[in-house]
Length: 197
Image (tube, rainbow, N blue to C red; front, top):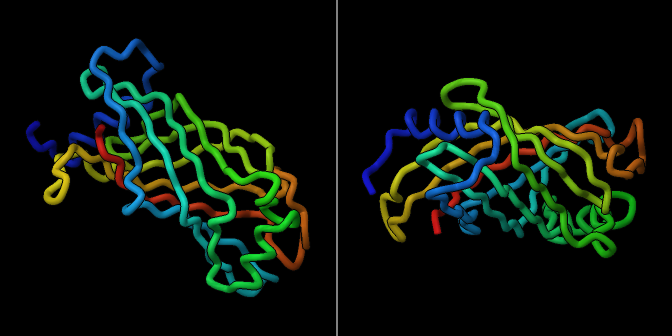
């Protein structure tokens, strides 16, 4: 398959976000590369500085039809207990019922089937985010970085995505230390490469 210029690939992907799901004539499944993914977050601590963290265990896939420019079946699963803030005691607390309730709810999930193009290289994807067993609609601001054959290693067609969103943890039932000691807004950053199967 020939290489596709990043700008043209981005146009194709964002156009796909604006279209309804259709019968996919030549669809392909893209799976998130576990070696090239980052799901990070930041949250204000006592008004002084943001605490940063990430989730180490992330799996996901989506279906994309390049010919019809259709995106569907977006599904991402994150291991709740894989949270890392690089401080052992804090990680234990974040996994507790005060925050993520990791024992009762071992997976954070995001599913989507719709989106809207906002420019040639950007779009939004709106779906359902489930944390602590609570599901809320969430919109991701998405940038399509590149769609091309990988330049080394596996050599398969690969899509590179950057995405951000902001949620309120109180919307998902976590109200510990609100409103002063731990912030309510959680900024989320996703960076990943997805390989065509």
